[in-house]
Every structure is written in C-alpha cells, then in structure tokens.
Image 1 (cartoon, one colour):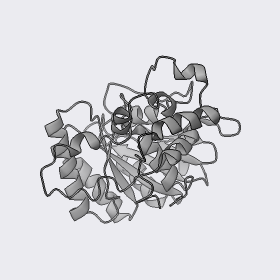
Image 2 (image 1 turned 60 degrees about the vertical axis):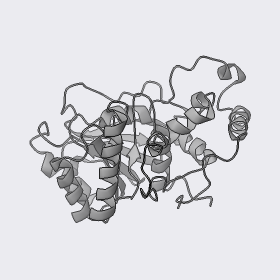
Image 3 (image 1 turned 30 degrees about the vertical axis):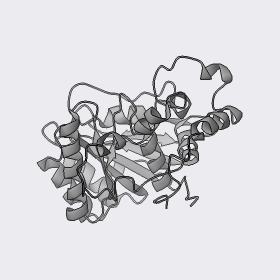
Length: 296
C-alpha cells in the first residue's frame, strides 16, 4: 500500500527536480513553463507555483493543521501520503493518449442495464447538489472535449453514468440521494452497490459547509451493510470559513474512526473549482484500482 510512503516534501530543491523531470519526460515544453497558468488542473501548471502553494493544493489539510489545538490526534490526516513521482504517474491515467482513451461510455437505470466490464471500478455517491458531477469534471479536466454534465439544479443526475479510462478503470457518477433523488433511487443504487463485482471503492461525498447529514448516515449504513470499502470526500472546501470547515472535518474524522469499519480512515478535502485535493484524489483512485502499486 501507499500508506506511509515517501513524504511529499523531500527538500528545498524537490520542486526544481520535479520541473526538470516533467520537461525531460515531455509532460510540457519549455515554452509552457513560462506560459500564464489558466488553472491548477495539472501538475505541469502547479509545478510553477511556490512550494508552499503547491503543498496546499495537493494537501489542503495543511491549511487547517495550523489552527489545531494541542493534543489533537493527526494520525489519519495524511495516511495516504504518496510521493511526487506517484502523483505525476497517476495523472497520466487521467489523460487520453494512444490506446488509453477516456470517454463517456454509457448510462443505466437498472442493474441489468449496466455494462459488463472487467476493469476495476469506482463510484461517486452523495446528496443531491453535493458536487459529484463537478468533481468528476475536475478529475477528467485534462481530457479535451469530455462532456460531464453539471447543473445548478439539484438532482440533475438520474442514471448511473459510466466513464471509461481505457482499460485502467471505470468511474461511475451516481444519482444523488435526498430530497431530489429519483423515485427508483433505492432499487437502482442499492442493487449496484451490493452486486457489482468489480467495484473497488465507493467515494461518498459530503458538503464541507454542512457536514454529515441524516441521509449521509443512511448511505454509510448501506456501505457498511454491504461490506463495501468506501472513503469520505469533503467537497466545496473553498466556501465555508476556516473555523466551520475545520469543525466539519474533525467531526467527520471522529465519526469515521469511532463509528465505521469499512471506511478509509482519512477523509479527503476537495475544491473542484480550485483543484485543491484533486491531484491527491486522482492518485488515490489510481492506487485503489491497482494502477499504482506501492514503491515503498
């Protein structure tokens, strides 16, 4: 596993080394190094930032740790701690190249409509309007032309939407639960989660402003009942004030440690609009789907 692997910060010259390696490996040209950064979607864009800002983008938890009081247990804050090389390698799985084609594949409204795929699969689930489709769009932002439909209206996703990343993995965008859930949500989602043999990880999204809600607890009970491995992703972290976000994070962390069995102990912090935590989440997906073996 990648738990406890090489730390992200490996010395003052690490980012200089990273930039050089990206140039030599063809990740971006020398002209691109001096081009204005339009966003932080790729390692090639954030590698030009100051080390402190890079660390903040990859590990958003660093912005919260400085506000912690003495005695707070931070054991699980960076349980998944990949090296720079692993993060860069994982990013390639989220680019279309050659035979590695990334695209929308199909949709399904019932389990017997789902495609018969053998590659590892991950799915994203959460309350309506928690930001599932927006996060998936951010994860695949390096794929020109890939359409991930995002709506301001809650409950936009009504089907299981499958996105194939070559033969590496499949990602499934699921309908949101809660007030705007489709009428057949339970039949559609429960059967998929219970019976999908190649499902490797459930990503359960929680809004960073409001934390765990009753509907989230029901979803967690479902994951626990089906004995499916899952992880909590705290979304929209750019919206709440720092104090509220820190409170929500600690509440989620405590709940995971004390109330769950199948949940990965580390919650992931994400801002899909600022790409904070997106690079780390890509790396985690690559890891749980078996596309990024441990080097430790």
